[in-house]
View: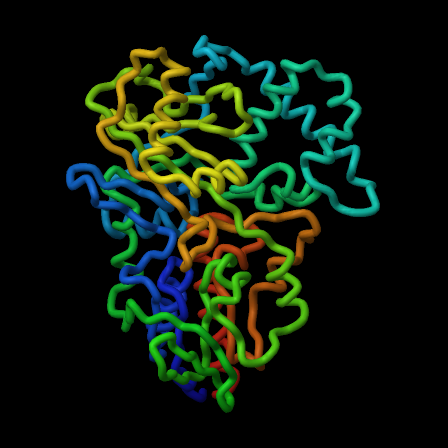
Amino acid sequence: MARQRDRSILVVGAGLAGLAAAQALRGGGHAVTVLEARDRIGGRVWTSRLWPDLPTDLGANWIHGIEGNPMTELADQVGARRIGTAYGRSLWLSETGERLAPDGQLEAAAALLDQAREEVEAAASDMSLAQALRGSQLWARAGAEQRKLLRKWINTSIEHEYAADWEHLSAWHFDEDADDMPGGDVLFPDGFDQLLPPLAEGLDIRTGTEVRKITPAGRGAAVHLASGGSLEADHVICALPLGVLQSGRVTFGEALKTSRQRAIGTLRSGLLNKCVLRFDRVAWPADADWLQWMSPRDGVWAEWVNLVPSLDVPVLVGFNAGAEAAEFERLDDQTTIASAHEALRAMFGAAFPAPLAGQVTRWGQDVFAQGSYSYNGVGTRPNTRKKLAGDDWDGALLFAGEATSSRFFGSTHGAILSGRKAARQIMKRSRSSSA
């Protein structure tokens, strides 16, 4: 049997997808170099050490679905501590802070949404989730309170999940990844970045190396660096976030397949930002994992994760998605933290203490991310992500990243699996050329 020919591979991006691809290829005996524009690895996995006694995950936070999940394998490999959280342990509060028990109403809201989507299944073309709902018979019959609760439920269960406004989410396909990994959700008290070392072990990773252009080069491909110069290899794996691909910050020297260009233009890069607040004491109900607030402004500080049950620290993390997240990105940290504090005072009373410190994310302004993760906007089809994945230039250029995952987009395990898939494609090609 002929021995497979070892290939040289350049991986652009040291996020989870890029590292997973590189590690798999290294294990197959290929020469791999990873190029990363940042001064750190991990991409949208970012554990802040600003507070030395409290690692703070400003990017990826959870493993969503622990059974059969490659992230669980990595966590086991490094012995990372994990603590479960559950949406079922949520405290709902009215606009003025009264406790609510909306379980039955939430079930009705979910049913209303399902009915609205059924009504537009036979429509001639896709439309936004908002358009489908507002045009439904059930919405027309719903009262103001029911609509407000439904809007709140959509914000925190759907808009936060997919990092996008209901005005932009596809009514037909926003939840194409609904068959997610089984099992509960866990977070990492010692930081999500613990999972990076086994992915990076033994790799040639060059941080601070920004790629600005990728071109064909003979039977392979070349990357051209922002600092000048270029590198060539048999294959290049582009593992950049969708937002970066859409921005044109990295260009391609030869046209990509029309279907791939269309996929890049059709998919959307979402935005979900956090405001992490640290207090000197717990001044809120300590036993709920999640705090759900009927905010007077749709989607503004409507959902918080309480870290007391999981980490035993007086920390609250507030979320904003879509347009609201973009609006807060224009403000400085002090103004954002003050706004979050005002929301908490509305929830728990005027005596609610001011935070000792806070950390704020702005993923939309991060030039190497340009968003949090991808979502299915209006016009996305079930096969759109498959067209983004795969190879170009006769196999010299391949794509990986959560945006290329049809089943698990927007997730860390989707990124890992996409990187491994790209590696398998190269190794398959290598075996075929050696046969």
